[in-house]
Length: 297
Image 1 (cartoon, rainbow, N blue to C red):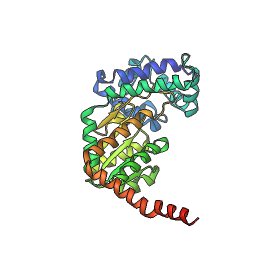
Image 2 (image 1 turned 120 degrees about the horizontal axis):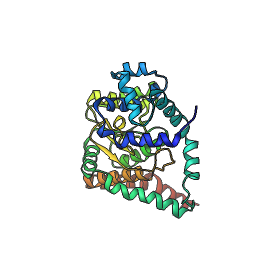
Image 3 (image 1 turned 90 degrees about the horizontal axis):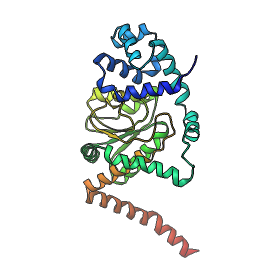
């Protein structure tokens, strides 16, 4: 099978850029493919037709709109794209080989990161940002979802919010254990999600359950594809680079830091008092012991 990677990338970009102009049936097909990739790669056109509720002819026309001769050619390229183009090794390799202008100095790499950071100033909706700050500040418990490399973002958020005396829980389990984490989520809680590229099976299960429970969610992401942003209106979007390349966590970390400072501002003296309590405990149970030990020695 010939992998026409550049042709597929153009088609995939068209899918994301022209999504709003798709017919209702074409949107259903696009949503299903992106959200259920793990099932799609094993599906025939007949299976896909039954799962989506679209005719086989409509699916063929969808592939043709993306410049494919038919469903089989589109599926073959999509499978190859995800299996080879989006692996961690390939993303690193592509980031090194494809950017001819990048000298790989700290300065040049950081300048590229700063470009995306500057873009986020305009892509993050200020009204959504303020609403998420309010929900974090006033809910009973903040649950932060981040698995894999996104676990670090979840840890950072919970670490800072814990210092404000806010109740937090990290959701990072996968598979069947994910539902054990979901048992702790109540109606008066708020869930902040970190998710990028495309929705995983766990992300879909998580958001489906939370949606059924009527629990409010906020999402920090770098994609506006409907299958991942269907969690609701509270989307904090920041581009991190091209799909298929190595992207750092600088932009989502900046959004996370801004949320933390926003919460501190919202809670005001409560945060100051909480941090003073922390410092008093440190002095009483840690710093004083060290000083006393030094005097004795």
